[in-house]
Length: 274
Image (cartoon, rainbow, N blue to C red; front, side, top):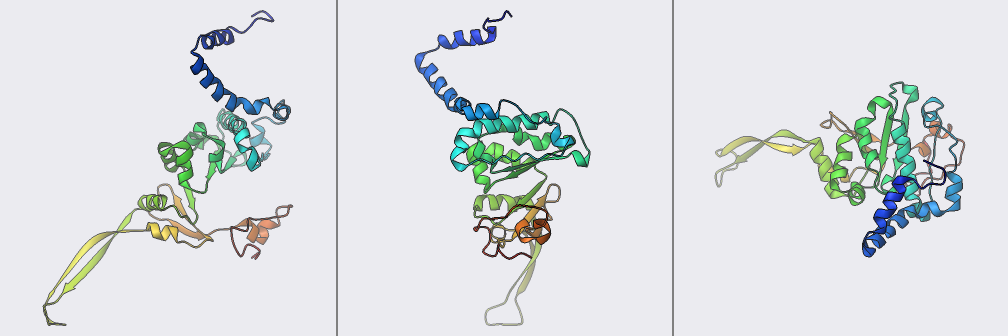
């Protein structure tokens, strides 16, 4: 293609939209402008002009990448974050690695806030042989259903190997977890006596009934410093453990060099270090 000439693909697309109905074109342009708004910022242009690391550096150099966004900027920057996360995830799947020291962890805290990331939902089923571990963190399964839909929420729940469940107020999801754990069979015995007889006479019967190993109410009423852990393939044996909060652990606190300010909502006793 000669210098100065318009790329044929761009020209053909432009001609196609130029012939579109005015209302249809206006609708498409509106959606396009909303998603591309982030790229009109000179600050974003400056920040994305170059890349200071290669994707493979996440494995070989053990570097950490932190993405922190102000609440007021999430809606604007969400498209950019989706591009970044998907680029990292896809490039890490170009080469298999089973070396423990090359394992890469993606901690996706409140990932639903960035909009739909379909590729990341499929990652747990694809990434095991590539040494990429995804950790999805959200306040409620209902949020996944809200932003992704029930089918995608089901995919997340069925592909992750471990679930760490904190105290919740979502009855529907608590019932779902209870069903995943399953039931046990217990014996029941009933005894009836004839009228006016307290000891002698009457009949006894022994039966069996299904009983929840862990009921929805049990799950919703665990202590705020406890968690329930489900392991794929062993869900009938859930683990109920104490949560190891780093800001309450002297050994973990000694390994970081910044001031810790946990949310006061987490615990009333968060200032007590054990």
